[in-house]
Length: 231
Image (cartoon, rainbow, N blue to C red; front, side, top):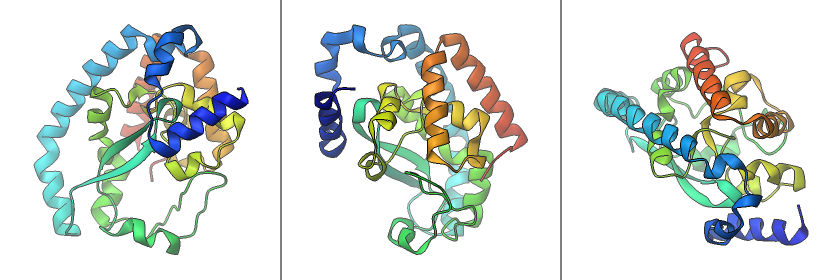
């Protein structure tokens, strides 16, 4: 990656400027998954089905979240997507309402540019169940539907994480972030080293195909049902 390219990505990540317009003229330089119409069709189909499921369980989940810890039902956070483009990711809230303000009080057990604590005290009782079953991530189907994310891709990083990236880390932003991917399907919460996550993401980019996406989706469903590696 050239210095100019990295500078543009940093600008995108820090300002929210969309790189899509500039990149539209250089499709040949983009990762094929970004402009694959078949992948986009699969995303839309999956998102519609996922949102239908979300609608069915929304009220009972919302009641459980609020009764356990009054506050917003949904949690949103700014993440960085394709080539550093910022977007708001949506989840069912699994932590106390002021979790972001309390983050500095929790020890980071992960290595590198991610934050993780297996016994994070900010997670509510209902939140632990939502995370264990991955129900907290269902609202992300909306992000998939509007094109911010894909069903399968790389882990969507926070803005603070991206500010610390080196050249190798930036490569993982050449595809859309996904609800699942190599990390979730093959390691999930058992992986706590950021460099291992990057390795998995880059491997996904090399192996990418529609068939491989379907394989990772099916494997993720299996992992979730077995609650393997869940938080």
